[in-house]
Structure formats: C-alpha cells, structure tokens
Amino acid sequence: MLADLLSLFFPPVCAGCGSVLNSAEKSVCTCCMSSLPRTDFHLQKDNPVERIFWGRVEVKKASAFCWFGQESKVQQLIHELKYRGKKEIGFLLGEIYGCELRETGWVDEIDMLVPVPLSRNKEISRGYNQSEWFAKGLAQGMALPLYRQSLSTIKKNGSQTFRSRYWRWKSVESAFFVRQATLLRGKNILLVDDVITSGATLEACATALLKSGVRSVSVAAIAFTPLND
Ligand SMILES: [Zn+2]
Image (cartoon, rainbow, N blue to C red; front, side, top):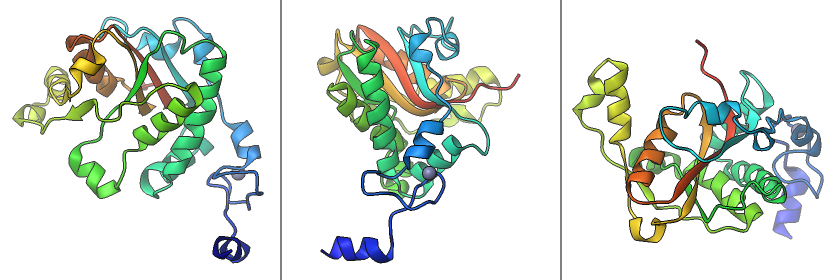
C-alpha cells in the first residue's frame, strides 16, 4: 500500500524521456524503447563489432544491441545506468536483447555468460557493475547461466604509465585474470560489456579466457560506438 501511495505522489518516470510510466512499463517507456537505434548485428555475419577483433583475438560471434550516438537516447540510458544507480535499466535492456538473441538462434552454441569486471575500487564506489546487470538480463532472456565472478581485475602495475599504444595495450592485457578456470574449461563463453569502442578491454578479457582453456569466446554489449579515425 505504501508503494501505491508513493507512486501516486511520485509516479515512476521514463529514464529516456521523463514521461510518466504506465503500470505495464518498467524504467523505460514503450515509445523510447521502440525508438532505440538497433544495430541488428546479430543478423549480420562479419558485422562491424566482429571486425574490430580481427587480427587481435579470436572472437566467435559479436554483437551490440544499439548504436551509441552522442547525445542520443541510448547515451542517456547508459548514463542513468552507470552514474545514477539505475541498474534495472541494464537488466531490462539485457532481457529484451537476450530474448531476441535466443529467438534468432544466435545463442545456440553458448554455454554461459561472463561479465567484464570493473576494477574493485570502481565497483565499491558505484555499488555495482553495470555490465553485470546487463548480463543478468541477457542470462534471463537467454535462459543461460551467468558466472559473474569468473573474471577479475588485477591491480595495474607501472606499465600503464608508458605512453605508447603497445604498452597501454600490454597494461590492459595484464589487468584481468580468470578465477574459475575449471568451471569454464571447454565451454563457449559469452563475454558481456556495456559499450564497445576500441574493443581493448574485451580483447584483454577474451585473451585471458582463451589462455585459461575455454573453447570459444563471443561478445555482446549494450551499445557500439565506432572509433573515429
Ligand atoms: Zn520515454
């Protein structure tokens, strides 16, 4: 009853446009949800997200739900998810996309989901890992298990202070390790992130997973924003 009273005076609003949500809507209104710029990369072989890993690490399949776009609705939703405590947005987007990926058969050879971890300090200050919340929704939509603590960050060493691209890459690579190698061995992993830009973090995670003996790594994210040349 208290919840009903509260929603009478403070009705829940859409995180995308601020309009009052109806009782069937959660976090994002139907209008905003249907206007999101989908990539449909899961229907496209050799799509732009798959291409960014070519020559870097073997990624079986890769896709992103939406285009990012500066000052777009997607950027707004991700901002709310990352900086305003709205983790349910991650879950909601994941659930919708997970169902789509399942219905199209994209997930057929995937055994489990693993989110890209945040550094410990960041996760403590934010209180949660936004990629993990997207992964929770995906796992629900796909009806697959989520192994949320399989990857972990390592405290970075001094190598990140080197300016060259190579050294920056090396410092990212050494920043992840696999914690549940026996559980993951021989399995097809779906690695989950929030926004894909250069793919450096995903490359480092995928490399660590493959070195630990997983069978394959695929990638899914909320949004994709290509690096400008
Ligand atoms: Zn809206």
